[in-house]
Image 1 (tube, one colour):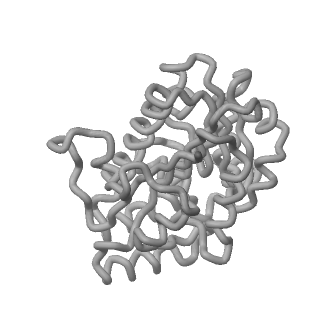
Image 2: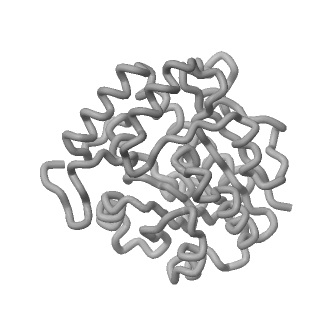
Length: 265
């Protein structure tokens, strides 16, 4: 990315752009590359972890569409458009699948609109996922997701950027209250469990001065974000291991990321 677009600060690293960079994308600034390189020095597996998380998202959406028959998706913290976006994966099963993407980063809005322009079954909303009313009451959400059909609410690699002060559990509960029975809540998140204390310290310092500080939670607190819904399978699973044969499961790096989903009854 050679120049800043309106509303984008090229001097501050963006979690969305850094994530895109680790996936092999090109929509980043020098500050993002420097941040990613510094983070990778403390955790060489950063790129592999990002790719494992993305692969888990693709497997999960395929499962929800194919096995659960879900045709509507709300992708919170969607990040920059990349290969195999949620709507593309869902449409392999349901050509009429609807998807609403949400991200607070203005970079994501600019690129998403350029890709989704003219697609009547997708929309992008620039909004904060911890303020659900702005999303639930948005005209695009009402137009695409309010037909009474089950909705998959996706929170992939976003809750570890939600501070406790933003009350993420209350926000997630509001989304759950708004979706019909049969809907799915799916969460992936980095976890503090199993991380070396020194690595935790270094990561916390690196993310301290960025717009989205990193909040590492134990699995017990991540499970609490399901707001009382039982997780399918009973436990969180490493993103590199969920939905793949045991012999193909990726080894958990120093910083683990876990995944789980629950179905609203």
